[in-house]
Length: 288
Image (cartoon, rainbow, N blue to C red; front, side, top):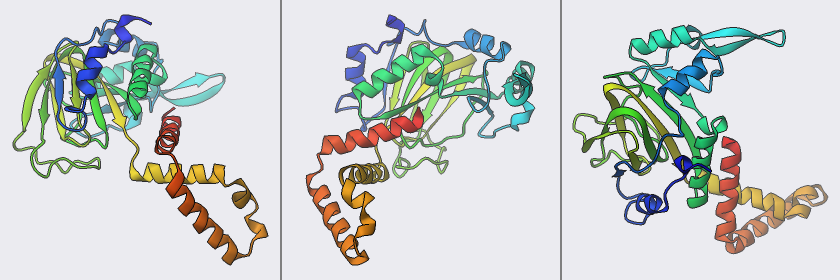
């Protein structure tokens, strides 16, 4: 594996240690060799070769999403008309007007990004999504917002000025746009090779400065209470085979009583690591 696609152990320790993870934002300057990752020229070649297809890419402009048909075309695929392929000229025209190109689920089709995402899932109890943002000079793709996840950013090309809004009442568990952006709590600029970590729910936005900016974002999602409940039920279905598959042999009152007893017993005995592992497996399967 190329060194360009490996998280240095010391960097991971600083980003994910107890004093940072879930507690405070953290920026590491010139922390990662990004030579093997995507950049504007590589993405442009993918566009020109028509290798990108919606919804693996989209455009954003100040929080608005242009109509998909305005930057995609139909192509003939083995005798069938298939919509959603990138129209390079239309994408370039919209980007010239300030639209950000966003690539979704980059790890699905770009091996170095997949390597980084896989390493994060080995290091942390999270499910990882990956996105690339190519933003024109003095533009921003998204309004100030919160992500319902931890966020890890790698600046690949150009410079991007980040605004964080971590004041009282601003941080939350859910994604949203209800952010008071009048007074940023932190303002700083990322340059190629810089890495930034944001705890779950920290509001932010970013503007490209001095030229186009390309950055890679990983969202790191820990199991929510809902995910843990789903995993609990998945374990119940797998462990209580007779009750689940032969419930029809029991009267309803007996069935209800046995289910209650089995759920109570599982709640008392289910190993926490196994429970978490099941939740993460389900979450990662959904991303894949």
